Length: 58
Image (cartoon, rainbow, N blue to C red; front, side, top):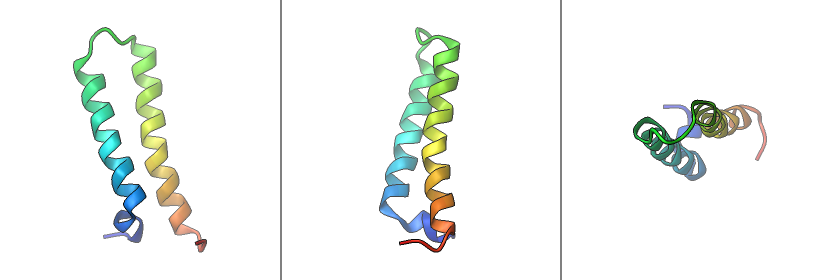
C-alpha cells in the first residue's frame, strides 16, 4: 500500500469520488459534457493528493 492511501484526506476524496461516479452513472438527466467534467475533476483531487504526497513535503 502506498503512503498516501493511509491519509484521511485521500480516503475522504476516494469515498466522494465513488459517490460522484455512482451518481453520474445512474442520472441520465445530466448532460454528457457535465458528466465528463465532473468525473475528471473528482479524479483529479485524488491524483493531486497522491502526487503531493510523493514530494517530500509536510
